[in-house]
Image 1 (cartoon, rainbow, N blue to C red):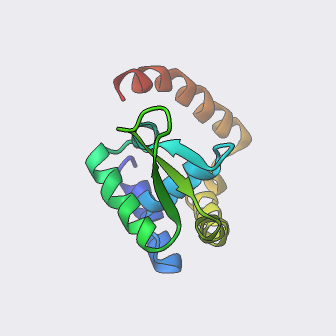
Image 2: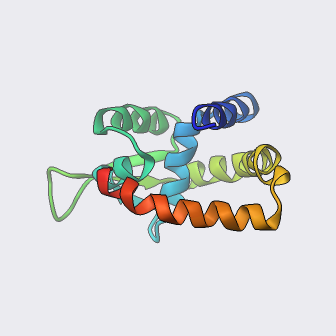
Length: 133
């Protein structure tokens, strides 16, 4: 399941919107931030990417006009990724189909009790996983 679900979500996003799942995750994480901005190192951590892989993905998102990078004011070595209005619009266009696919592949097959159990199991596993990321 750990391999099949991400592959299925990536396939749906690519077919419906042309956006790889990794790019969708980047846009989604930036959209959740108050200023739609995040340090590149922090963004790499939350999307589970290496700095190099994230830099390549953000460069592609910049070419689409969906993300901009700027030097960090407090640390000139660091960079901040900003979600543009066009990037937010792309995310908002992709989200309904993505949410529907998650629902179809996962939640339509689970009872409320199953969902509660899944949440409890996830809560137990996340602290360990967060320590190593």
